Length: 457
Image 1 (cartoon, rainbow, N blue to C red):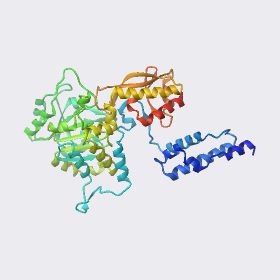
Image 2 (image 1 turned 120 degrees about the vertical axis):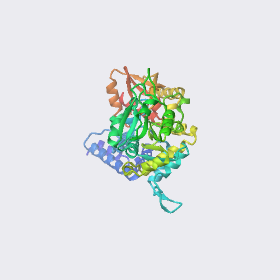
Image 3 (image 1 turned 60 degrees about the vertical axis):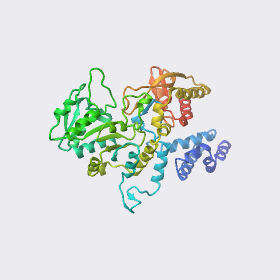
Image 4 (image 1 turned 180 degrees about the horizontal axis):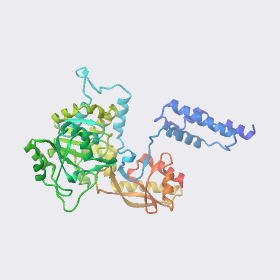
């Protein structure tokens, strides 16, 4: 063995020294000590082999740490990414980011036994959904609530329970399709309900519903068009009008709200998304909505409304197939509790915070990124642009934003390289620029973004 190889081998840092590295200590908050230690040993053994084969001429501790980070992060298929697209509720990137309070409550419940289905007062078996019912009742004036795996499941369960073999009256203008080819008519067919279309695509009147009611009508259904808008020569029936008709005829009214939000977004400039409370006040008997869109929590489908109807739905055998686990319930409960104070909800629920954040605050962060890139010798510009809420929510509601733009003749190649960084960066292309929308960037991600851009340029 020559002297150079011997010197390199002697300079290989000890495992304990690497484990004291600041970046490795950060990894220990996400991975077990034994896993990080074992990974470190493997990386150092690999380095030793490379030295013996003559492939290494110097030892760089930073590169060793990077190898460990890369090895650990690539152990899992599901990985964190940096969302620089400006689409807040990005379905492909996991939709809502959970509030810290939700994450803490999930960890607390997941790492311990809990009173998931145990009544502490009576000392006997309890009900799984009582935790959510209590939280919901503090926000919305309803007598019953239940939660399933997602809103598609919620709609299906309502139809299967309350309308199997019976007719459900819905406007032709509300026979929507959302992501994944989820179509209301198809769901009705699978649930056993009979679709009764009324009106036309652009115009449906109250008389259309009234004339369609017969002895086989289960309920009147209104579907919120959350991912598109019909403009021009149009007419539709309000929830209040439909509710009054339902009460007159003794027929329940169900509203599929889609996204679902507990805050009146009109005060923030979003006029097309009614709040859950507003829909309930207008007289809907059953309301369904998602947990991981505008609400900003875990994936779930809420069913709230009249307790007699909720009780019927809860007894459906499919309920067990669609039920959520304790971690989802914990995340939802903690998220819902934040809504008791609107200001706190806006500040602590990432989805809401990103949607309503002012352009001025975003510009300030964008300028910070520009300064950091400039220090690295990277040429970038500040541009005004438009973010999107995403998730099939708030159609036509673009939000003014600021982006960091880098001009390149190879935009696709640049994007491809960004997706291979650690963590991967997902941006968007506009003309000859790769665009990083600051609205969806978390403060902790800014240094990682700058590092990724430097790495690929």
